[in-house]
Image (tube, rainbow, N blue to C red; front, side):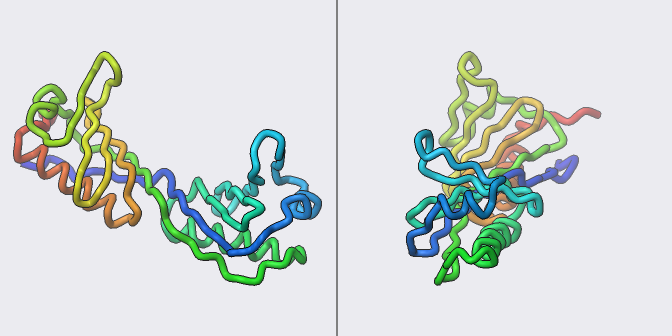
Length: 187
């Protein structure tokens, strides 16, 4: 018997992008003094934005990695916004960015506790070594995600490429935990 609907919040969306051309990172640092670029330590330039609050790594190859967005849409908009700002500052970018969502991380509260010892024995593709890590690691095949399950009923879902996959993973896992009577609800 389901007591509550899981509370899901997307905490990070990672997207890769490419404009398929070389970019002069030194030129960007001159025009955007707030960027971080230390080529002797790391080959990418960090371009931070306040809205949406994201960090986009820009490489001289024209490849980019955007982190920190809270939705697929925010992630796409962040990359497009960076490209727009570069163009406005007379940095030539010929092509539109080709953007691919690489990973979505969500934190979830199931609203009840989980019996991890029993779950480790009855959930397929699960690993639980409490001496090493306090959560159970469950690898779901469809959708292909990895879910960290904690006794508190909190989860971390990672590996999804679409927001719908996050919700489907959580729903599938919650249903499985319910059916196997691994959820404990306070009365």
